[in-house]
Length: 502
Image (cartoon, rainbow, N blue to C red; front, side):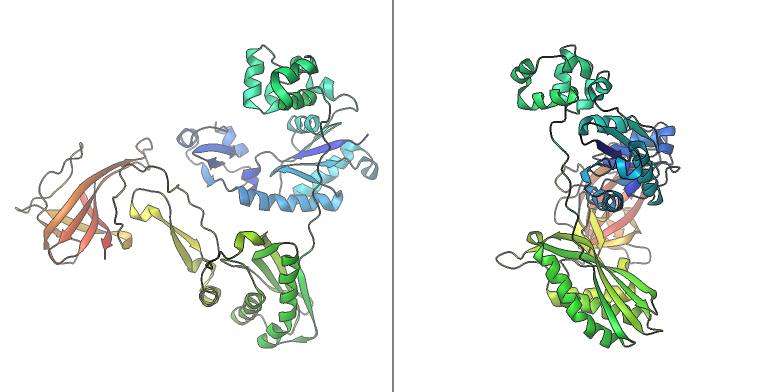
């Protein structure tokens, strides 16, 4: 009978963001803690805790936004390492996977788990736990109860005995678990003792499946993933070349095969790693991203730019490798009936500038949620997909009415607004203006001018629960007699110009 091993890396979202276990850190999802490091737990941070509660427990907590795509990409490295030791890994979700136990090859089940754990530790996964049992469910529960860097082996035929005293929460189904608790069935053994026919009648097909799991039966074998094909393309240059144009011309055929092989599997490459060898050793390595996907011409351009900008041709080049780091389904990037995406010439021009000034120096702009114009800006390096920190569709009380200002200053400029008699204009604690604005100066050094019209205030009491981040402001729209219009704020009795309406 085939035995199943489940490998579990606790706090995987923390591992994926490369945070040290000794650093208090947490990953947030929808304002709540999804995962936290050991150091954060020592300070009282717990999963499911609200952001402000977590920060009150641990003021030095480093916060990261949850990125499921990044979690999956990071876990791909773990799956590849496991496949080198035992092919046929079945990923369950990032941080959790299963394999058939290679006991005979490594001299035993616990020995096999130790070999795999040691390999993952070298990858930087500091805590990996293994559970071994007859079925997938029992093996997962064993892994969750194993010690750090250790394994828990359930003897053959002992899954039902092992599961008997576990709480019904292990089924991870809120509706059925809640019903079982109301019925007085608190452990998996209590649930397993019910007659299968009664379970099917009361809970249906899904309940019957959970009942089989509670009895230690294996409802279905693990589904192994197919080992991904090797898409890396390498050009060996014999004899070695020392001119960038010659190398770029030679790599064209390799680039075309690279793109064709990916397309044959319904994929396109959006991030590629280009490595160049000189004298048999790595001379330069650079990661390139594309706002759409790489074609042969794009790859040839990147090779040429990398060789020209980095100035690496101090010795003849003998090898060039194209390594796809991020691939996506071709259908996700297909043009619509009326086309789509930026013009190819624009893409190549921007990518060329980016190769000269740096990846982070060229950004694309989009809009995210927020109240002020500055916090609504979302900047992402060209070629990367922007990840919004605040959803656009949510209500944002205190946000500005349209139209939005065209020019948003990087730093607010100190301004001044006074009444007809030169008295300072402010806003009371109840959001009332202390006087009628008559004259204003949009920035220090500018001339005073009369106010033609104004609107506001729009008061915002932001993050009032946080003594450090709390901010209480009021926004105004002010128009001068020369037609210039500004977005201004009052904070702590001082006026600032945030943006200009052009």
